[in-house]
Length: 343
Image (cartoon, rainbow, N blue to C red; front, side, top):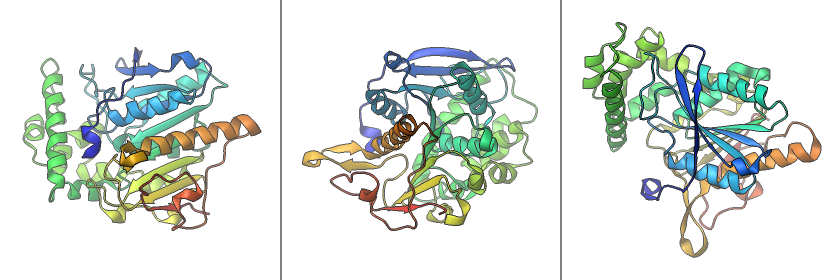
């Protein structure tokens, strides 16, 4: 909640519309062009996010200060302008991100490319990495506040204080549906009226998301879209940051050690909320620790690649429970991180 109150980080975007092979489009927000040949990070927002997402803008600012270029990928249908086709982004649709990764790699065959995702965007990023395997055209990746198992997350959002977050997101989704279907008749596969009347995500996904994406029902959608079952298939160095008190999720969805590929590092905090991780710096002033942590991980990987001329190696530890200061300078108020990899 504290992170919602922060002013939007100042970031100048150069907007580009990317035409897709199926006739639809993605909008791209580029920053850091002055860094020219610097490394490049693809930033993937969460549900109802986009160019204005504070976590993406803040991370972009941190990376640009380190000499990076960044591009916020506004997923299909996520912007204020409705996309052209019935199809829209969801938790399991990785096709557009993978297409964009390969496009970047073809454009810049020697560039160091990173990819970062938050929440839904984190699930899409990790799932895409797993699906690509050794063919993934990115050098390093990171994700935060990921719904590793979507069904328990949907159930959690139906209860207690979490319902306030659910209502806000559902209201935004329904507004986007109304804008889209002012000029585009809904697909016969969906029940638009039921989606607009949905009281929770399960009802919404049952009526709209699942049938539109070709799933039997919401349960089928959740099962096949969750990234947690695929983490062993990731082949590039990847950091995942998660908080046990995330109000969108339950603590038991955090993957076990044997669910991680050797190149995946999982950092688990006792507190941090959902894409929050606000910590105390000098004089107790708050700052967004997560943005610094993601930037440090990506930049360390880049420096390792440049110095050694080999693929960067993920920071790893043998077991949970080591202090975060072993890996990254601790903030004045620590977050109680535990570290985990499959080694």
